[in-house]
Length: 270
Image 1: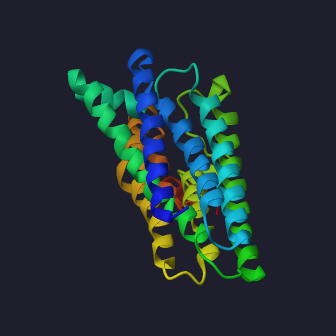
Image 2 (image 1 turned 45 degrees about the horizontal axis):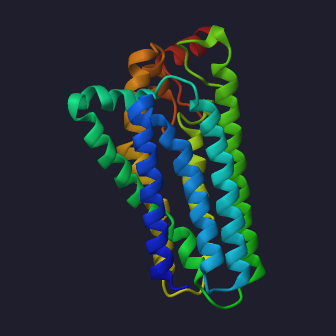
């Protein structure tokens, strides 16, 4: 199957799936369920490119397994987190801001996500349509990046879920594990995941396109629907959050900065 036909099928399928979720959220008033569907549907697109691609079988197998496993893991996690729960604060805020225009604008928002997903899926398409045997060392590099990204994101998700599950932590800021070093370690490893497919595109004339999805994900999380919307809500709902922002890296895990109070306590001990 040609890459243009596969891409057209992927975009049409994503648009239909996201439209169906939009229709469902008109009744449920829970637009947050688009998140698990987004992850699972992208995993399905990875399988589509792996099966339809005309490239080296080892590249296609890596794309299919990597994309499908990532989508299944993240989709299942987000489903468990969102199903039967109140609407995510980010979507609730949009619904409130849009008022009577919310249904129409939410549809546009969902369809834009379908287009963005198609762009992210370039990570799958380029390797799947690249011919020529891929050196084992590059497969090893891709697998290593994928394992670190998937394991890191899963660990961050588990640590946050365990923290939130404790009633005593209600209204507090999670600083457990990876969350001590990054305000959004799950987002960091999500961005890293999209870099795992770049080595699989080695030798392709279109390898530069493989850099677009990681950059798009970083931009979306830093500037659009990730960190800005989430941190606005957290700053309003958790009194400790401004201090957390001052001391902790936004994305890349890094040792926390010392506050003036920390320096004062250290000087007093000395």
